[in-house]
Length: 296
Image: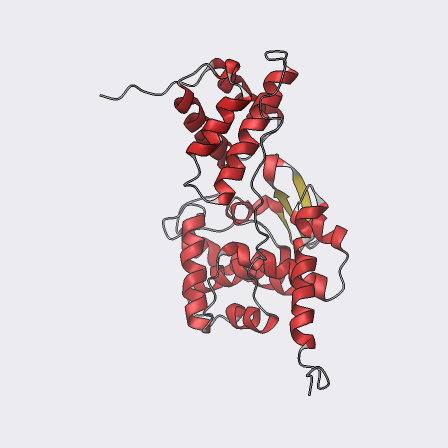
């Protein structure tokens, strides 16, 4: 029988710091825990005495992973040792000269405005159609993360003042305006169909699943796949694609990058700048249509 893994007190202290001081999301915390567990088990403890050469050996052992995973491992380990150094537990950070592999920039997938219109053109018959329409319109109108959408509560929607209150990464609150069209379908869903889906149950959550709980990421993923198939959209569309589409379309129509950063809840403007690359790539593509752009 395999012995159960028990994290060292240094790792537990670091994870507490990430959860309670840095306020990282549950998903991010889970990924940090997994990386640290793999690292800790490789050395069978004794992380305080790890040297630069030990780290080189560890990095060599994970070369079968993809570039992004290796880079994440190195980032997590470096952050862990910076924490130990700041707390005076170690003097030098053994990660200082460990190079992280360069991750090739991959531009995110987004829908064109025409594709978005097709996706949102849902034939409204059942209460679930109205729910799906309200969810998709709201996601495209606000650029919310899917986790943020799933956790929305009725009290987070301010119909009168046309905004939604969102609790993003690290439970940071932000206020995001909502379009008139999204508000129209939210009102229809809340006023006429939400209670039908709920039957006699009471819930504080805005979007209700078929099992009468709040909608889940997996549930929403199935919905968007079904609606894409209905609309004839062949792109690999995830809920995050609507977030990318929201930002790309705003930028294309002249919105300021800093405003988009605030709406998306990005801490760093460099994260938002990827959408400028998307728009520039589309401009280059469209420019090929210029009648005098071909050499004869």
